[in-house]
Image 1 (cartoon, rainbow, N blue to C red):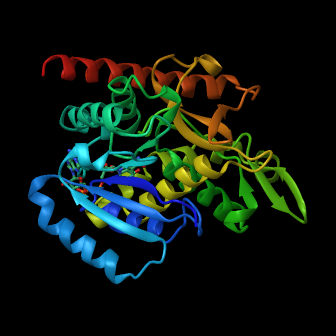
Image 2 (tube, helix red, strand yellow):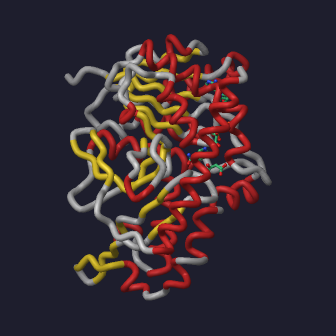
Length: 333
Ligand SMILES: NC(=O)C1=CN([C@@H]2O[C@H](COP(=O)(O)OP(=O)(O)OC[C@H]3O[C@@H](n4cnc5c(N)ncnc54)[C@H](O)[C@@H]3O)[C@@H](O)[C@H]2O)C=CC1
Ligand SMILES: O=C([O-])CC(=O)C(=O)O
């Protein structure tokens, strides 16, 4: 039988984790033959809630789940893990931008970077979900120098899923008929959702989304706006931020990282920028990537017109500002 892998989920008593843990433990990320030991980290005031989550996981009677280790100690949580879902962080409330969470959340990612550095496997794959996700991933990686920077990523898959869903609805096709919609930049309201490379499967052939839709004013206007503001729209309606869709997207992100992408297909991930497409280096920027053998590669050679370039500049500048603010918060502590 395949040996179990250890997977940590932080913020395990919170609302995203409540959906995420079930999806992981069912085998939707690492495969239906991969046994799991789940490490659940939360803070001491949530220890009681965590116990309830452990009871529910047991009551799900999931064949792949060998053991569940609830803890409030990062040393225990990160010990020997192969994959880390860093969800635990404060969520925003109505009227806030995600970067308003920076001063409260960035310290969490310093501590967890240090714990990953010391206790996790060196090939651990780290997905940062907690906001502001890109800058938290940057901080986490900086405090884990013994783990390659390529092993840290931030989640923009929810934005990709939102964008893909909007395009499918506009074209009146099933979601699976739309591919290669890109999210560039920050998981924030400056992100650039780009359907320019998108493909749609119609009458047994893959065609260009822009050609089939033939509606530049939609693609450069309401489409971008809806996706950029979707998180805020969910908060305005639910009074809590997205959770079910965030959990599903975290699974999609880690699934593709673990298993690879199909030829010709790409997905968006916040990864360390190497300056591709004129973006700032040394920020965690969302790019289209292709994945093979658990290694992502930024898709190269895509056409960036003047409109796209201006959008990439705006979101790149915001990431630079967030990086500088994060550094000053960490220096003053
Ligand atoms: N990247 C993305 O696309 C998305 C990111 N998010 C972000 O995910 C984060 C979590 O959201 P929810 O689950 O809705 O929040 P929540 O408030 O329901 O749960 C967060 C959990 O994290 C725990 N926590 C706080 N500090 C911690 C620490 N140092 N170590 C371990 N656990 C800690 C809290 O006690 C709580 O149980 C938020 O920052 C939210 O903004 C949410 C949706 C999408
Ligand atoms: O909007 C928020 O604060 C939560 C989030 O990141 C999202 O739903 O994309």
